Amino acid sequence: MNAIKKYWHWMLAGLIFVFEAAVLLFFKDKIYVGICDNLDLFITQLKMLSDNRAFFAHGQEMPVLGSIDRDYFPSEFSLYNLLYLLLPDIYAYIVGYLLRIVLAMVSCVLLARLLLGQTYQKYEKAVVLTATAFALLPVYPMYGFCFASMPLILYLLVRIYREPRWWLFGAVFLYPLVSYFTFFGAFLLGYLLIAVFVLWIRDRKLPLPLFGAFAALAAGFVCFEYRLFGVMLLSDEETIRSTMVTASYDALALWRCFADVFLHGFSHAKSVHTYFVLPVCAVYFIWNNFRYLSGRKAGKIYTDIFNITVLFIVFNCAVYALYFWEPLRVLVETLLPPLKGFQYGRTIFFNAFAWYFAFFIAVKNMFCKKQTLAYIACIVSIIIVGGTQCEYSDFYNTCYCNLYKLVKHKEVNQLSYREFYGGNLIAKIQKEIGYTPEQGACVYGFHPAMLSYNGITTIDGYCGYYSQSYKEQFRAAIAPALDVNPNWQTYYDDWGCRAYLFPASGENLYDFGANADAVPQEILIDAPALKALGCVYIFSRVEITNADQMQLRLVNAYQDGEMPYTVYLYSLE
Image 1 (cartoon, rainbow, N blue to C red):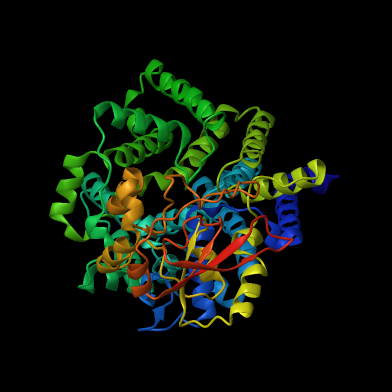
Image 2: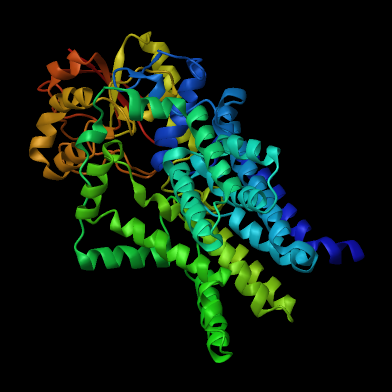
């Protein structure tokens, strides 16, 4: 009993971890996970790197979007990415999810031990419980390690500032192995540089250890993401980034954008703070600053760590909103041309940790004499995070969808990991037609990732970086559909990361669930232009009613009892 009383918080965290691991490993490729920017992009790219033995390759072309250089794919020097080199993709995905939880917990505990010092034991339960809520946040899986390690880099920097050691600088240099430059690294360096100047002004002395940490961190990103820097700074190839058009908001829209991300967070960095963490922080903010004002200690308002954290959150939200203010964006892109198309509004990603850092301070100080209330508040935050459904709530979605099928005895209107990639159906088609990698293909009504995952060369695809010239070539092939659909035309011309065959009907055919209708419909393409790109086959989710007119021949319709759709295979005549 004494052990339970002393370690119940660790037992609770461990039980949650074991339960999630057991569920995900039990269902394996029948788990339900986020598709957008996940299954349809990076997971497929990592699978392709593994299948093509291209993780450490140079000058190798990847069979997507006609053919693009391996350098446009994720770096090999990333601990998360390397899981896909060492393990089958589904196990790499699950292990990556679980390691993210462990990394978040360890990072939070290390930071808490450092900041709380001798009082850590007093607050350990609240630390572990808050860390558990943070670790379970439904953030973007590909960069889960980046989110989870935010407390770690803060721990390293604080230690360097207080008592620099050579191994700490080495750890900072290696930190990019669990981070990513364009999502986190650029902003970490910016924040660190601001801290250097602020401390320099405050102390009237240059904080050389932090400046050294800045140099080590920058060097680490350059070394471990050398491919990215090569593409961004050294390549003379014009990419789609040069023609991207970003939405421009007026004053009212900017305010609404700011308020939305402050209250609800961002889709790729869900902080699930709206209904509990935010109210608790708001109450503490009022209470804490009232104490300062009533006690004639107004000066402490500006140095209070909670207030600084709230200011940091507000600043990140403001930068995210101001990204959509055209005058500022044009100024940044004029002064720094390589940042054309760079989304500096990603400062919002740091709020996922900042909210829970602020929440811990609030419950720690408000309930310092009634710690049971602090524990209850932390457990409530865990329950809310675990019970929130959104795009990247992998565990919640897996439980819900599989229980729904078990209880209702019918398909849920989502696709599992296996269903998204076609299971054995695509391999069956490849075998029947005698497919070879020299035969290019594209999809209609699916994500091209389904073919890429299965080793089929695609002329279409989804990628944040590829040549502008190929975008224009592919546009010629889909021009008939764009000409009759202004929305698709704007979507492709102003962005272009998704080079897809867009439906003539104007609807979105590729984002579909297991219960989606597959109504026969037309396709609008320039068949000779498509063929010139190397396309031999079109894998369609719907029967194409004007196939003859579009110079297409139906090879066969393929079904599989495990897949909730039919694949209509057409060849270009």
